[in-house]
Length: 326
Image (cartoon, rainbow, N blue to C red; front, side, top):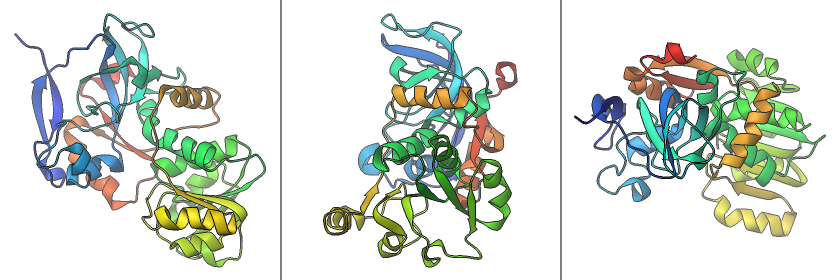
C-alpha cells in the first residue's frame, strides 16, 4: 500500500479559499535527494503570488504545475538517496525549496541535498523555518547588490516584515548604521533588533527629510524612483525586492549619468548563503522574528494574514506532530 501524508494542495489558481487539506502520496527521494520530515514551514508572499496565478508563465499557464506550495522548511532527514554525501537520517536541516518545485506545506518533502543545510542547534525548528527565503534575500540584497560596507548609512524601508527584520539585523552585523522605516506599533520591535534610528512612516516621509543614505534596501516599493534617488548619496545604491518595472530602463541610465546604482533584486537560493546565515544565527547576530504560528490546516488563514501586510516578522506553519521535534 502506498504511504500517504497530509498536505495543503491547490489544483487551480485563486484566493487562499482554493487550498485544500488532503492526503497525498508520500514522496520518494531520488538519488541526489533527501527526504525531510517537516517540523515547520513558513508562508511567503511568493506563495500568494503563485496561488493567484500572477506567475503562471513559469508556474503553469492554465493550472499549477506543482500542487503543493511552501518554500521554507525545517525538519529531520528521514531518508537519503544513494548519491547523497552531506546528510544522513536523523540530521536536522533547513532550506529553501523555491528552486525545486516547493512542497513545504506537507508533512514530508523530497529535495536535492544542495537545497538544505544543517539547522543551527541554538534555534527552534520554527525559527529555522523563518530563515531561508527571506534572510537569504536580505543577505544578497545588502551584500551583493548593495555592496554594503561597515560604517555606511543604510535605510531599510519595510523593516518589520519577513525580509525587513532580517535586513536590519544583517546590516547591523555587517557594521552599518541602520535606519528602519516602520509604523508606530512596530517601532519597539525594530529598536530591539538594533536599529540605530527609526522613522515612523505614519508621521514622517523619509524621502522628504533631506537625509541621504549610502544604501537603501526597500521591500515595499511605495515611492517613485525619483523619490528614492533623491534620498541616495552620490554613488549611493538602491535595492528593492518589490520590483519596480521602470528601473529596468532607468537603472542603467542613472548609473551612467549620476553614478547612483538602482536595482531590482531577484534572490537566488543556494546552500552557501544558508551556511552564511547559519553562522550569523549560531553567533546570535541574527535572531528570527516570529509573529504567529498556525497549524497546517490553517495555511489559508496564514496567507490571508500575510497578504494584509501587517505581520511583524514571519508567519510559521507547524506540522501536526511538530511538538516532538522542537
